[in-house]
Image (tube, rainbow, N blue to C red; front, side, top):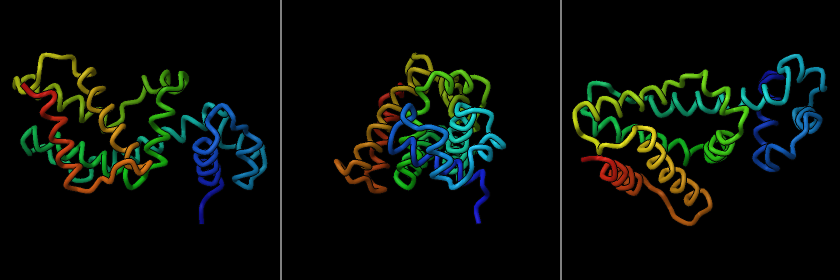
Length: 186
């Protein structure tokens, strides 16, 4: 049995995915979640807080998924390929959440709040880039630029799979993440 809070989060996720953030009202969320407006405000002070909580939960789930078999003792290239493969797999297994988190990451109030959060996956990726640069394995580019290049490619790949333009399988994911590494290595 799910809690009322979970019902609210799921209803918010579904409505934003279907209609877009701007077109979703708190009354629609209450109706979809089958709770009263007061119940929503017992859990969340505002729509912004609710949407950020949804975003945060997806990011945390994605981090846990991507880091499930991450081994810091492996060589840098292996760790990089593992992380990207896991993120791609998350996107395939959870396409709505993957697309939604990418959409919500562009919302100004979420960007503002994200600055105070340190997601484990973001931290691990940043550390991986720093370590790889210290070992002169990567091109002389800022890590955030490399992350944007790789993230953009990965997002486009997942989007194409989700919209059935391509069919991703493990072999194609492996080739794709390898090509991402090739794009940034020295």
